[in-house]
Amino acid sequence: MKFFIDTANIDEIKKGIDMGLVDGVTTNPTLLSKEKKDPNQVIKEIMSIVSGPVSLEVISKDREGMCKEARQLAGLGENAVIKIPMTEEGIKAVRILSQEGIKTNVTLVFQPIQALIAAKAGATYVSPFIGRLDDISSRGMGIIEDITTIFNNYGFETEIIVASIRNPLHVLDAALLGADIATIPFNVLKQLISHPLTDIGLERFLKDWGSIQR
Ligand code: G3P
Image 1 (cartoon, rainbow, N blue to C red):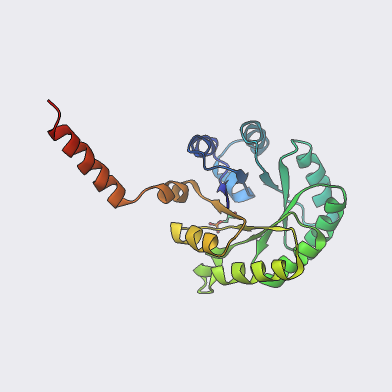
Image 2 (cartoon, rainbow, N blue to C red; image 1 turned 90 degrees about the vertical axis):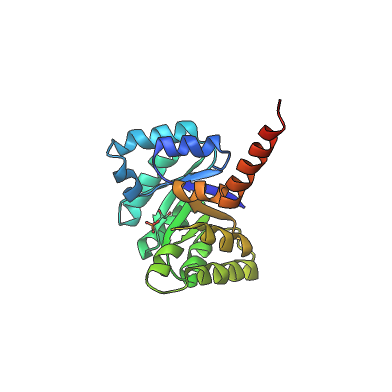
């Protein structure tokens, strides 16, 4: 299972890399807007420090605009993946970009048939947003299970990025379902490592060790 970090914050990405937990990065316009910097500069900096796949989202709504943006973003590096929204125009763009060998990540997926359509269009990745489904009392992880079954049924190579992750249990459930990738915010990435009993246990070991030192 691969861990991507879901952020556009350079400091978080560097810390995640240092922890050895960053196989790739996903960004979106909201995450970039939080940085309050020139988004193009932030994107270039991310590309310069990350070797794994980096998802960069288009903002055009029409196929031509999306493809134009996608070609420019793809020029930033071989690891650039173009995030395309799950719309009719988006799917048309994915089909064109896939034929051009440009990697795509179909985003804002909220039901399994959307993922099937994205895979049929040749998407490299699909990003189902599970946290936002949980937010409206719909079982987000249910669609990961369904998408996994559908992709296995037909042998699609499209990888599933479990997105909109809010807590460590989301990562656990994604792993139990065999999801390819979880894209994880930095605060959750840190939560994955720690456990209060680990801290208490370590403190006791060190105290006991100290008691036998002369
Ligand atoms: O990768 C998608 C993610 O950034 C969306 O997360 O928390 O805005 O639903 P959230």
